Amino acid sequence: MKFVLRIVVIFTLIFGLGISARAKDKQNKYASIIVDVQSMEILHARQIDGLRYPASLTKMMTLYLVFDALERGELGLDEKLLVSARAARTPPVKLGLRAGKTITTRQAILAVAVMSGNDAAVVLAERLGGSEAEFAVQMTAKAKALGMQRTVFRNANGLPDDGQFTTARDMAKLAEALLRNHHQYYPYFNQKNFTYRGRTYTNHNTLLGKVDGVDGFKTGYTNASGYNLALSAQRSGRRLIAVVLGGASGRSRDSHMTDLIERGFAVQKGIDQKRAERFALNADERKITNIKKPTSKRGTIQAYTLRASHNTTGTVRVVQGAHGFKIPDQDARQNWAVQLGAFGSAQAAQSSNHIARADASLRVLHAEEIVIPVRKTNGVLYRARLAGLSFEQADYACKTLIARAQACLVVAPN
Image (tube, rainbow, N blue to C red; front, side, top):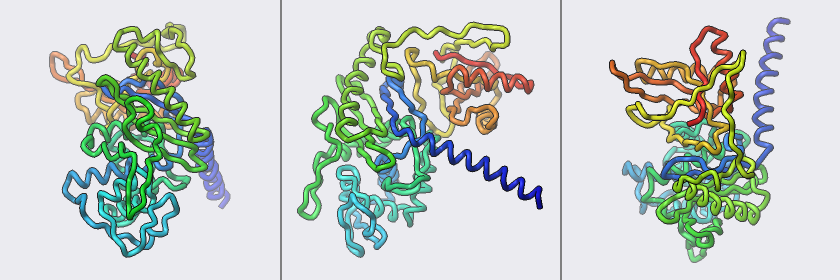
């Protein structure tokens, strides 16, 4: 009995610590990221892997699955969707849909994209998932397939739920996937107004038409999340995605986002002109200084910079279908990697990544799993790497593996 009680206590402590750490992570609401869509480079990053509440940015995934269904022919834009009693009871912001009535798919999409209608999101979820809970499972599965490794959805509209969380990096991945896979539906996010039953609703994204190039995506707010905003902007044929989470107010969030967009385009222009050092943003938004590569010392693993793709058969492929982001040199402190070996098949490399990443003792649970095909004279080898780490994290993981007589190499940012 004492043994069983001891096991229960230990399990409770471990589980409780995990929940406590997750809750503490989400107490810090702020995070932000800017990505150059063409190059997939991160131009600005701050707390991009910290767990945050998505609020109504959740609806971007709801619409992603709706667009998927439209493309498969499983849903029609003019199809009339039945409003359930549960959907009608959804808390505001809402259209005020009444149980037993109908709304077309097109109207529901506009309600979600423009005025962030919570009830319309539930109607869409119930149509595609049978229930909102089942639809949320589909949302989370799609998130994993898109490489949103730290995102879990529990509902279709972003109303408060302690178990629903995401990161700035993950929301940028979702935004990029919407642009890449459903660009024909992107104009829904650009509508400034939406009229339903004689009432006109204004888009909550007030930067539309005010900031040069801004043409879409979503706002979000709950008490727990703070003021969130994901948007995209295009100038001179170049497009950026930007995400700000946890703003103190709508006005301060919009002001901060405007500043990030302006400087993001400056960084992108500087990179294009090979003068990135004059414009680079670091995580603290101070002028960047050159980062010296760690020197080899006794007891320290030598870090090698492996320049990408001079002998590869293709671009880096992130496991689980993620469309990876490359972090340029000027913001490379969190882009170290651990190479676990080279394997004869992609499956073997993926398996090595999965096993290592799941090993809590290595402290790499947040790492990106990537597989790089490398052409050799006698065929193709597949490098297995865990990326997105600081040097300290990569160094610790590699030392731990080497102590177990397992192969390992710390890889510096390109």
